[in-house]
Image (cartoon, rainbow, N blue to C red):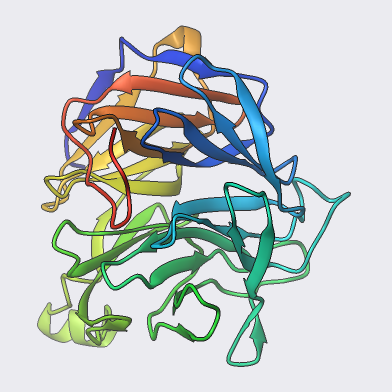
Length: 317
């Protein structure tokens, strides 16, 4: 097994607490941070001093968010099953006006098939977005996940032709030419090259017979596979291309280089949380990292050792 570097985030501090299973952090230009609250069905803005307010009620369980080309927040909503069962909605993609709090539903289906559990989202330079669908793995159901590409005006959505089990975190390389997504239960980060907006380069995957006979497989299928009980959640990308994945059970951020080298970044024991679900980057130099700690309901901040990638429509202070 490869060596894994272990690093404690010594300067981690609490920005806000008492949040309802926070995820989907988005760093804004004024220094505040948006988070979605899965167990409360809300989008909340946390000011630099830690004071927070609800900016929109989405109902269901908003799971991931990103700012689009019009300045609105686009939200993946898994519908509420499990974490907000008292306020369920149809799983969907929503647009949230951050000034008025108005919520519009953009998509509930793709090619006539219902979305199962929209999870995480990333915009590309064209103004369209990729999003992951975790699938439906509740008792009695084994619907697989998916990766989709859609427009922010609600007019176009398509499913990427890629083999997906439980797609969770999703992100783009700095040059926009590679799509990454985390597979939760498989403990893997997958990657595919992008041929054109919304089109992935076809990959044969790992054909077991060909591998046995010829030892050949497509290395662009898998960035990394991890051992143990840990589960991979949402992700962000550094400016240099490293992929940073919120890691459950072990309670850390797993940082994976483009060569598959692994580093585990863990808060100090006093701020430990087994459900570190997501990370985003903010600040003028994009070296302020925000971590959502969902078991304890906290948002943490720290100084990251390297700058994060500026997202397509992210405004900096």
